[in-house]
Amino acid sequence: MRAVLRVLVWLENALLTLLASALLLGALAQILGRLFDLAPVWLEPALRALTLWIALVGAVVASREQRQLHIDALVARLDLPWRQWVRGFTALTTAAVCAVLAYASYGFFALESEAPSVAFGLVQTHWLAVMLPISFALMALHSVIAIFNQRDEAHS
Image 1 (cartoon, rainbow, N blue to C red):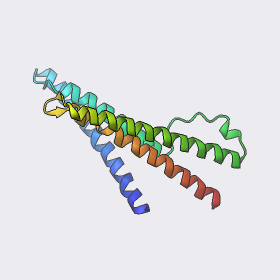
Image 2 (cartoon, one colour):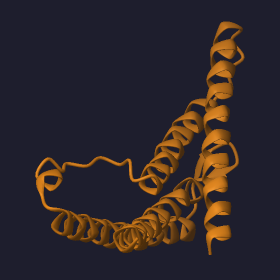
Image 3 (cartoon, helix red, strand yellow):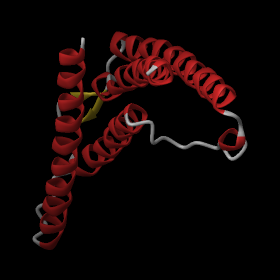
């Protein structure tokens, strides 16, 4: 199981690096294209889609590292057993919400793929939406893993 998680971590990091590099190269191409009046029409919407994908993969990485936004001023003041219980409940709630969002966004992807339209170039809109269910499912997975990691830390 740990080997699978290591591969998943590597894939998430590699995807984030690849997307960020593509965004930088695309922005450079857009600047140069505007200077020489050669900017492709599809580049602006492609960069917007890349920005969304980077945000989603970044959220997955943040949830994996448990570095997402926490409002836990009260939780930090609780005794250890209560703090662990509240953090476990929060992780479980996060996993449930992300699972519902993954399901709903898969429905959105399925609807988009039934009546495809062109987003830019040859890319259809449903392929831009494919990252939504994947990222929410991964965030749910990381939240469930956090529950078990917290439980293991409490028993060690």
